[in-house]
Length: 98
Image (cartoon, rainbow, N blue to C red; front, side, top):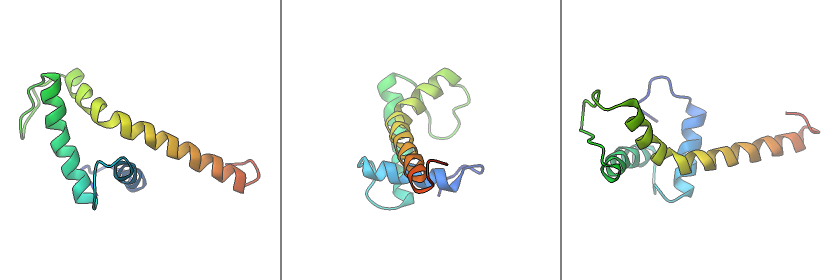
């Protein structure tokens, strides 16, 4: 699903599902990747950070984190909520044990 070599397929699927629920994407995994690609440039522009297509090794890790934090904040928060729901449901089904 993603461009990252070390990504976790289950987490990638959860990110995709949460993004779809939040209305960020309307179709498949390609739509999600396109959303992320477009959004990082929009967020960088809003934050006043120069982000180029291609090489961006000259931006600080702080600025890169600010961009990623703005993109992932809402998605990440909803992912945590879903994981907690999953754990609670699993505990109910397993007599209080994970």
